[in-house]
Image (cartoon, rainbow, N blue to C red; front, side, top):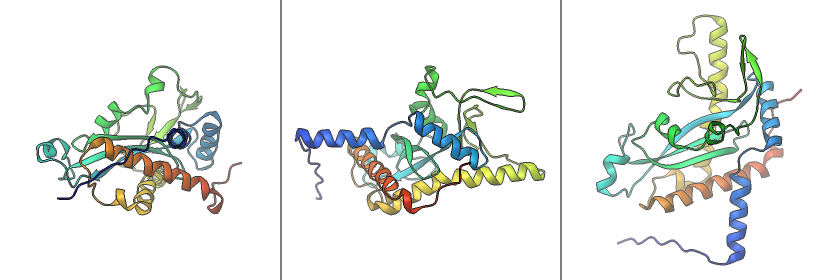
Length: 232
């Protein structure tokens, strides 16, 4: 029998450093970050864009038999869902992890806290006008399953002319930021690339969040090595 154990370190200094890392590298974008994200979005042809949003499934190899029905969705095997918001440089600004794989993107969206501040009227103020309509919220690039909210910009399902085809091509291209982030996260950390071997959801959440923190640390460290979009 293989026994997995998790060692908790009770050193106050270690816990303080761990909490500090989580506060820095799992934080929400501040005002300076939002200004930068809006500038980059405008330079890429999507003014007032804050990033891309999507979900990833992590397969649970040791999911208890009694839970398999609840954790099995369209992947036809038990999984846990990770929802993230990613910017142009693959920095993960929002991470919500732990729901069973039987949920879809809409169900996860209703339970995550990505729009919790907006619903309380505390979200970042972003004012712009499109086709004669005024908006005061930034938006995210998303795929077709997401609801038709003002905070989501999706590709046109059946583009019929050059304008709509160009828009759809650009939207699908820049929305790949989140897909690239998932690929980079799995390439860097084999523990999330392969199936999860723990069965305790709390342990799996610690593993996933730790990998996201280290991923953002690497993005920050390698920022100067990769060209960034030109900002006028």
